[in-house]
Image 1 (cartoon, helix red, strand yellow):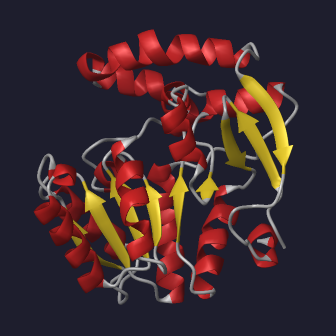
Image 2 (image 1 turned 90 degrees about the vertical axis):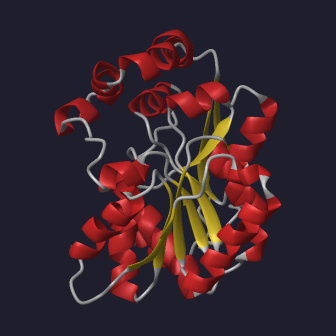
Image 3 (image 1 turned 180 degrees about the vertical axis):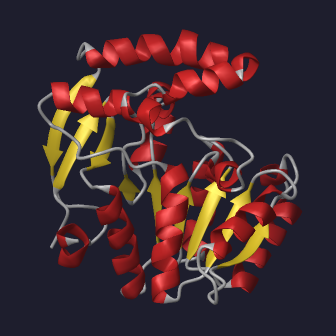
Length: 269
């Protein structure tokens, strides 16, 4: 069965999947020996994807799921509702748990020195007796511009033999990296996860559940990191979110053949 229902919001086409369905979709592709690429756009990624090159980058992923309540609201107002928010900071736990059940190996790529190791410890602690996260790597700043560093990165991935790689470099760096190395790892699923590795390591706390549900996680993060996030959230993302909710950038539903063959048990889960 194909996942044919897709909702286009702000020029980005989303797969209409719950988090559970997303996990099962990836696991089912792995059962078939197929790799791929998953991206979780939030309002900031949508705002930046007004640039045609970045928009095409996002839309070229195999799975695109919604991370952001304003995107959920915009889709609902357009009459093409998405089922729920699917965040990288949650997927790092649920997809790793799925990998543990099926004997898959996970690799954490990104974050500062020592952070990925701590995240790996926390993730593995959830699955005693089954070391799921088998490798971590935090490449140096500017690694993507060095052929030597990129060769080292791919060598480490090949050596670990992961089925799932979480890439935490932020948008669009992580997506460009994934796009560049995807063909070299045809049986691996890559997940652009932003700050999820830091959150799994408990270096960056998530907002309380209530704030997440009402779409105010951004406000929680802004209070904690005003210098870094004020311009992005208040000057760039907030005006764009208002326009999105007024319908000026929502382009409605498109139904077509999915880029990835998602078997029936993925959507039936």
